[in-house]
Amino acid sequence: MPRRARATKKATGRKRSARAGAALQIRVTVKDEVRERKELAARRAQLIALGIEAFTAQSYDQVSIDEVARKAGISKGLLYHYFPSKKAFYVATLHAAAAQLLDATTPDPSLPPLDRLQRGLDAFLRYAEAHGEAYSALLRGAVSVDEEVFQILEATRARFQSRLLEGLPSGLSGPAVRLLSRGWVSLVETSTLEWVEKKELSRERFRKLLTNSLLAILSSGAV
Image 1 (cartoon, rainbow, N blue to C red):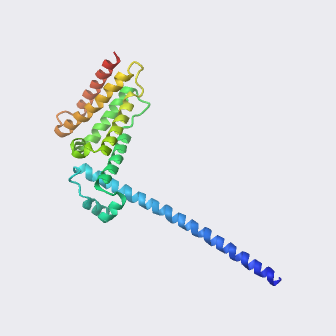
Image 2 (cartoon, one colour):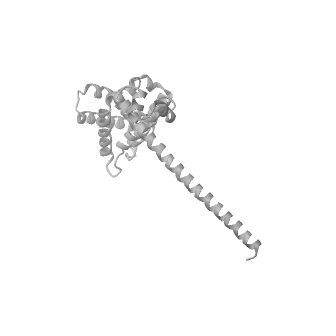
Image 3 (tube, rainbow, N blue to C red):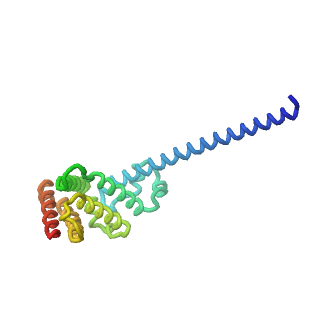
């Protein structure tokens, strides 16, 4: 083989090797980035789970970020890498808790509207009963007046209300029913606060009272 051809062949081989090496490096880099994202997501999910646990057991003011970090096996500084402040951490846990509550109370679309309502109410009351201190602290504590927290609560309330109105007969709809059902959601929140704290009624009895009150409200709104 002529010298020039051999040189060209070697140069081509070096280029191919360089391209192959670059491609391999890209694949390794992408794999590392994917793994890092998964690890970050897993760590964030762990911290949110611990946050829900902490804010469920204690009020906002009582929760110690140092203790949460200790349980997670990380420094407080690293926790603040994921959440820049205690309030930001709380808001993230509130988003997650609201999603859990909505998931827990998702109605079965195959059930009649009244059965869906009763199942959803029962799930809501069970949730409030299991997270009583956090439920009370959220709605009565100073943090509940924070605008960002308020918007999360409002979005959750709106979702509950829309579920209530899904599948209702055409005679039980319209602006009056929407307005009254929104008031009923507030009634459920405030009365559940007292029920959680005093437990003067069984869950079944309380659920029936709430159901009957909504039926009466809807009937008056449809007149």
